[in-house]
Structure formats: structure tokens, C-alpha cells
Amino acid sequence: MDIIKQIRRELLSNADEKIKESSKRFFKEKVKVYGIKTALGLKLGRDSYKEIKDLPKEEIFSLCEELFQSGYMEESFIACIWANYKIDEFVIKDINTFERWIDAYVSNWATCDTLCNHTIGDYLEKFPANIKVLKKWAKSKNLWLRRAASVSLILPARKGDFLSDVFEIADILLLDKEDLVQKGYGWMLKEASRKHQKEVFDYVVKNKKVMPRTALRYAIEKMPKELRAVAMEK
Image (cartoon, rainbow, N blue to C red):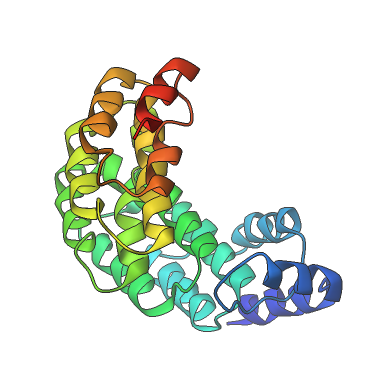
């Protein structure tokens, strides 16, 4: 569709070699980027959506898939923006599409978090019974699905929702060897601690002998100094 070509022309015309090289240094994994400022890319996603907003959700999801397939991070961000604009039309089976996108196209934490924090987080608040899917992802061989299992709950956990599920997912991921998964579930616990500080503190203390220090530090980041000190004691 012309909208995709139009977006790619805009991205190319705004590409900056310095930003491109800086972006690549920001990630441990190999990333494919045009090299544009994040704010500009997000604005492009919002502005371009106005041209397709009346299309059926299925057609917009197909366009999102085309963007994801390119492998460019900036295109994936636009795909995430477009998908999230269709929140009012989400149906329960859409989680299968989101899972496929993560499994097939996500290859860095920025794309993972952009899709999960908002699109999947909003989906789960609309269909809370389907949080069971995250527990399946937490056991996946794909590290991005494992990270997605926790970072999809960042915004709901911040509101105080899904606490028992937060702990269940943290239990599954507790001993994960991947740094980005440890950071993901630590972040989830940190957000849950905003409304449930005691429960998260108790969970961390109970598991601190086996919890990776990376996850532990993330989990207690918002707690008072004295509680952090107790949690960090060996």
C-alpha cells in the first residue's frame, strides 16, 4: 500500500548517520535502524495513522505485519502505534497475532517493550482471563516471549492489578539466565511495588538467596532506603 512507501520515504529522508551509529551502540544485540530521533518516529506513526484510521482492523494489522517484516526498529514502533489505536476493536483471539509478531519479528528489547507495554497491556486489561497466555510465554525458548511475559504487565501492575499473576510469572522466570529477562521481571515487580510494597518486599526477601541480583535491584528500586538495604543483605 502507498502508505508504507510514504513512511519509508519519510524515514529515509530523516535518517541521520550519527543517530544510526549511536542507536547501534545502545543495544547488545544487532539492530537494524534508519537512524532518526525517537520523537520524530513516534510522530510519524501518529500522523500516518490518520490516513488509514477508517480501515478495518484486519487490514491495519496486515500493514503492521508488513512494517514488522522489514526488520527496521523505527518501522516496528510505527506498527505498535497503529495496532494500539485499534484497542476498541480488539477481540480475544488477537493475542495469537501478538504472540506471532513477538516470536517472528521481535529481536530487541525496545521493540518488545513498545509492543508489550501498551498494545498487549491494554489487551490484557480488556481480556484479563487471557493472562494465562503470559504464563505460557514465560516458559518459551524464545527470550523475547519470556521478557514479554513480564513487561506486558508493566502498566497494569503499576495500577495495582494482577498481583497474584505478577508473582506467578516471577516464579516461572525467577532463575532465568538471560539478563534481559531478569530485567523484565524485576521491572514488573518494581511497578507492582508502587501499590503493593509490602507484598513485593516480602516476595523479594523470600527469594533473595536465589534471585539474580539484576532482577533484585530492579524490583526494589522504588522502595525506601531501609527496605532496599534489607533486601540487598546476603
